[in-house]
Image (tube, rainbow, N blue to C red; front, side, top):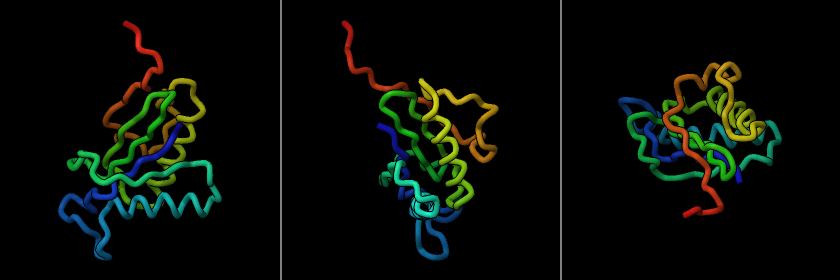
Amino acid sequence: MRRLVICTTCKFSETSKFAPDGRSGGEMMLAAMQGLLAKLGRVDVVVEAQACLWNCTRPCSVVVQDSQRFSYITGGNTPDEAQAEALLAWFDLHGETPDGNVPFKQWPQKMRGHFIARIPPLKSEVKP
């Protein structure tokens, strides 16, 4: 299973929880991603909203979650369509790899500097 998990409670900016329209940065990021997917006719991408991912120092937080490959936590994403495009492009590249390791030279420019952690997939077997 693969999905994007977007923190809905991330603040809009370093100095403001909410944008002028009253939405949090996370709500704006979620809307940007959902709008982009709709515009592209993409129904193959699962997007999940999640309140607080505990990454408050680097809003907006988005997780690329995968049960078979490495998962990634990102932060410092601007809540707009351009960042959503970069996240989606990286998500697609990630899905093309056997292990979740996307070569740096392939990363969209807007994804550089946004990765916080890499998490290994859960193993289905537990060895003693």
